[in-house]
Length: 204
Length: 204
DNA sequence: AAAATAGTTGACTGGTCAGTCTAGTGACTG
DNA sequence: CAGTCACTAGACTGACCAGTCAACTATTTT
Image (tube, rainbow over all chains, first blue to last red; front, side):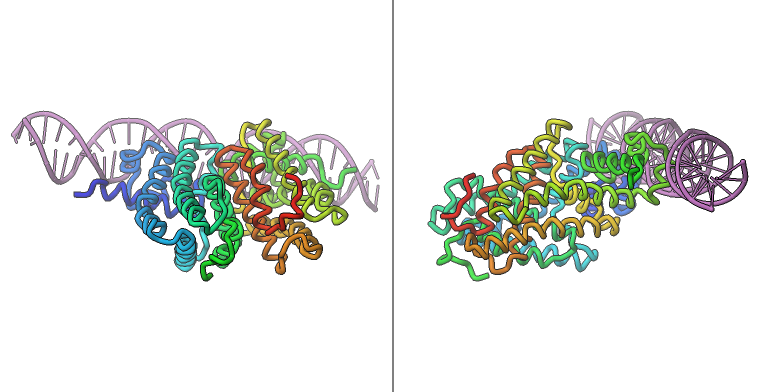
């Protein structure tokens, strides 16, 4: 007995796919219903608006990714290696998406957040919340790296936000240029931003 | 005698304002006409589609900003000082926009490019082209800084793209969080990415 | 002044939009 | 078996969408 009905799940998946591949504005409720095999009535049974579905779809996507993230950023791993694994993970995901749909899609949170930031505050707030959750992985890893003397980061929170912004900017460029290699190249930049001491360099 | 008619100019301005403040998808042709004081017929006299106007508006915005950029990145200035001035310039512009319309709007190129990248290829291509023009300012400054031994950047092109992505990511975060301070904080990150040698630090 | 060109007007089209509503279905419960 | 509840069906609404068009005016060219 599923905690979430099949149809609700399918609607969230359809919304995520369509919004990520195209955009929020270009994705109609009808299109989401069609992809999910649902009718209008079902849609508005589960969600009271298009924007509410968007927010729910983001949360759902997070739940799906969380176990991967927990594993990648496991505290049992050397802190800089966590980043190494994470950037590989992102690259592989983006490359796979490109193969599947022809385009590098970048980060769904940033793309959606930027698009609706002045229009749909509930969605914007959900994006902000999820970005914060992601950043907290960065913060822990940076704090650990600092404690182990691998990098100099007296303010791990600030360093994490800086690194995260750089990484998001790179993903966005990769979307616009449809070039997944930009993400691969990012590892070196990440090390500059982290201020890694060269003796501790992870093999890149 | 203006080379470009008043009405055409007003339409491009209206399009720029509305798309930047909201989004491409949320901005209707009717809304642009109303803001410009134009009727439908005029719109389609000057532009053959909404997307063509968007591309023209971006080019127009570039022309308006170019003289500022040329001055900020003047080769007569110490190269790292150019970045210092540029990031101040961006911060001040964003802060003013926030005062005027209540929101930090980030970079119109990135926001629009990300939104339409899989939908409107002509707009995407124009965004890409304009981003490249901006990056070329970065490349020159970085090349000069390297030549003067201020930083170590054997590949100025790559370094410029890295710095540019980081800066764009920061602007995007600033938009989503509606927080202009993120842009101010970016100067320190920029220096990390550039790999500045500390003895040459510009007063921040 | 005549003709041509550039710009303006606003009604109109056909389609799509997000969201509503009523009538149902089937499964589970008392 | 009667009642309730979660879900589905799909027609419908009224607003809005991008884009068209033919008639009109103003300006420039000949």
